Image (cartoon, rainbow, N blue to C red):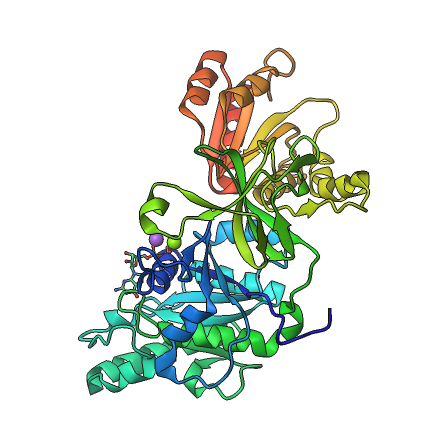
Length: 458
Ligand code: GTP
Ligand code: NA
Ligand code: MG
């Protein structure tokens, strides 16, 4: 379809930044002020993501007297708990994010994960807006709840204004050191070359109207082509989760197209492509009291962009970070299966053909790939016999244990990267003599493993 301002989907926006910069709080704040117990057209808490309908944005930004038309149906914001998960999102389905919010704590300036996030955004050429958050922490800040930031700053004392100016200047300088031009959004004359900074407080809501309006206006002004809705399903698995009453489900972001109940889909699985039919399309219940009980709303169909929980049989081994495909009536299933299994094929080439080596587990396909890559480097050179994604269960320990009689040095070893080990699994490992190494940083995992192997040789 041709670019068309009247047929836009919601932009998908990632919220990134250093730990505790206020990413989740910002999202809470965006929802909180407007969520009513019974609202239907209001803000809906989505799975790992929040959908903010345009009506809501209009209401929230009316003090800014925006004259521009808001053409997108809303904004789908994906919260990232620290940068690691974004790396994983990025690995597959790299088109997931149209735009990003980079949250910086005004009291701390740029921090290590801010810079890491920044580098990821640069690498992908993703446009972003800086939310310079926690302005309410400036000494003797006077709160104007939910006010546009310029109104709020006008009411501050000279001393607060000067604290503000100093901190903004410092942050602009730190961005400059990273090779980026930034400027307060209301002073920014050239958004193509200079990234905008929106001062915000997730606690008081100040600056939130500005942030919402800028995001939507900028996205629909500069990304009409990318945001033009089309029918071809573009959908990425964010998480595989057991959900009460629904068995194993997948939480997905539908970037384009429509999903229907009963659609036949193909999902990349750890043990090959999974062909299944959508049993239910779920979104969290719009009413908070039901949502808190984990109740979902069921839909006949859902149009992009939206985040959705899909309930379907056989999803246990679905791989996060991969695309899902809908099989249309005139399409060859085998061909779709080929496409769906691609991400797994590249992983399987990294596994030892002789069946000797350690077992590795990671939280997602992306982190598993990174770990396998690392284990293959000549300095490390650790063969891998089997892989797993997600928490370590007892059955994984049993598999690793099957190496006990074969090769002593790799016997019964499981490297768990960025995943939890179930207590039963841990117990069983002790009984069998399976060593489990866990770490959240690849290098730490390697150090532990090396110390152990060196110990065996002595
Ligand atoms: P991670 O998900 O752990 O990376 O952190 P996050 O970026 O999501 O930060 P989070 O929203 O959890 O906020 C961290 C802390 O900062 C919490 O105690 C928040 O209440 C607080 N906080 C967040 N935003 C603001 C703000 O604008 N003002 C003030 N005063 N506190 C804030
Ligand atoms: Na936090
Ligand atoms: Mg958070």
